[in-house]
Length: 95
Image (cartoon, rainbow, N blue to C red; front, side, top):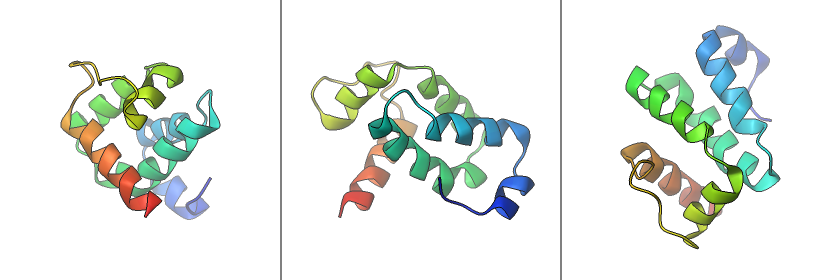
């Protein structure tokens, strides 16, 4: 996990919980997609963004990985601006 302990201490409990959940998924692949995004974006997320992120964290890793890799289409309920933002962030991490 990245990020400083000091930055983590300044984060409100809800964001800390979301960050922890992003880094501690059921699969390492999803840890490496959602964890760095959480490190980068949580501090600037609006409450609506955080709501959407928490809903996404409820999804099964196996399904989400298929969406991120393009193996299956993203369901309408998850095809949100936040999902697109995570996908774009993932692309920048890969290059």
